[in-house]
Length: 84
Image (cartoon, rainbow, N blue to C red; front, side):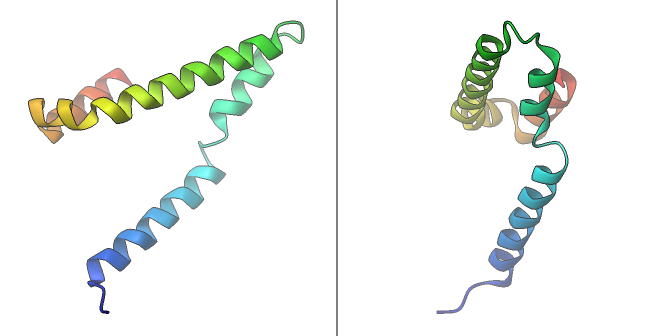
């Protein structure tokens, strides 16, 4: 069974993205809140931060295709760039 060269390139590109993200910005979502909050509220604050992280990821994943087709992919990524 032959695989097209584009699929091999896509899998390698995705693996590189995951590797560099986990070395660079990936841990930031967990490291920054753990250092910012005081020791007395750290457990509650980290649980709220984790919950909001998961809720935001779920909302983005579940609304991406609908929003992107409604306003075009370029418009959606420009919206994300403006929000960030």
